[in-house]
Image (tube, rainbow, N blue to C red; front, side, top):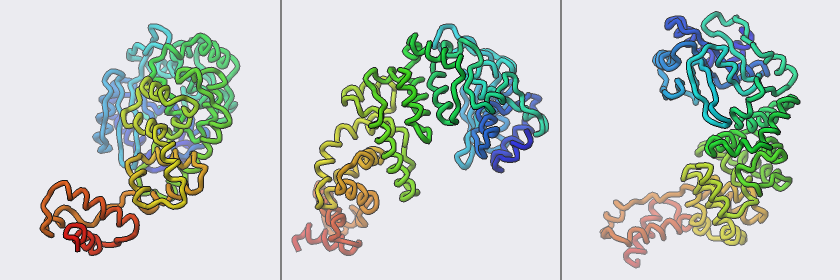
Length: 424
């Protein structure tokens, strides 16, 4: 285990060392589990830490948060907690638990358990590894299900035959992991996976849980791969039976990736894009607008997410016509695009076939986006202009002039205001 810990960046080593001290002080065995060990064995240098504690995971998390000066979010129902640390680091801490499923696709009934119980409830063998961090870093990896053999063989395998019936969302995860790592789904696992799909078990899952798994797929570096496989298996009908993932989808996703990467490279200081939402909009491209609205509501997307998704489909025809001309005033480009989200504009870029349209979209990001006036209402008052509706009209005209390059600084803005207000 020591050789894998050496690969971790200093920030993660500090967390593990601190967790080791808390485990010793509280006398609660603590284990690094799941995906982090998997990724370290596969050669990753960074991973998301997950710690499972035999005892009281929340108490352990509180002690560790105090030591690391981290923000803590507690999930009492599942006896788990999340620590938020500087540098966008996140640490999940759970109590080892035993799970039973009262019915297929139902949420599990959770009770305290030992490490064996906790590892036995995992989705796939490759995620069922553990390492005792209560001891020295040289402690061997705990491998109860030949997990390392499956990793070496590039194999996705469930731990028991009822796995997909207990939790059908594992269907989506199996395909996502197989595509991410280039692994094959083991024959028996694949047979049980197909049986679960054919039995309609995904329809029994709450749509919000399916949404969360779908978003994880859309956040993959290549979301098209797993979506195509799921479509071929008939496992995307929870979105819509009419949904098609084909070469057109592939082309749209490829174009979107190019444009999203362009944005990140050229505008690193601007807010981070919700890339998954762009891909979701393109995935839903074969559906009508009313169906897209129904899908977004059924999946329980947030209002802002629904608004961004729908605004693209509602406004794209008008925007394509207005911005496909070679000569469009900067004022018009600004007024059309400024109210839109970055994701909506990136969708326009990804689907743009007209070079004029693409240029106007680029100009918006490079020149017009966020353009503001130097003057304020205080300046208008100082000129003797009484507050009222005329303020907004004056500001709109000055902003239009600035966008069109007719005024370039504060003095020019004030001069234009005087002319507009006093006709001089």
